[in-house]
Length: 91
Image 1 (cartoon, helix red, strand yellow):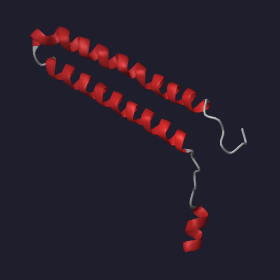
Image 2 (cartoon, rainbow, N blue to C red; image 1 turned 45 degrees about the horizontal axis):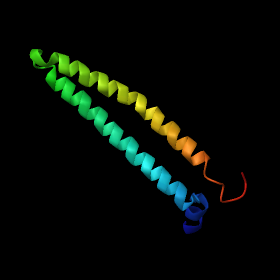
Image 3 (spheres, helix red, strand yellow; image 1 turned 90 degrees about the vertical axis):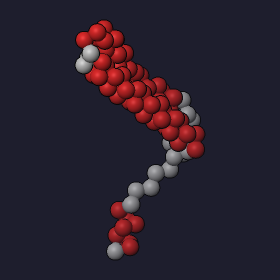
Image 4 (tube, helix red, strand yellow; image 1 turned 60 degrees about the vertical axis):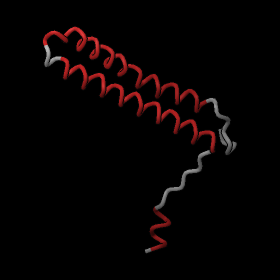
């Protein structure tokens, strides 16, 4: 059983710099997602008050714009990782 488990295990060799870059972009992406949720939650609550509808609309617009930021973060991470020299020499 132990041998089968080791045969099926997956080992990834990632350089320290690549790991740090991935973690930073992941944290940025999570922060962006939290902000999106807060904009939409606040906008939804403000829609309960007719006098605040204008502000609620702006919160939805800001949250929608941040949905555009999501792929920009992924693209920036991809381009950043592309610039790292291949430490295994096969690229």
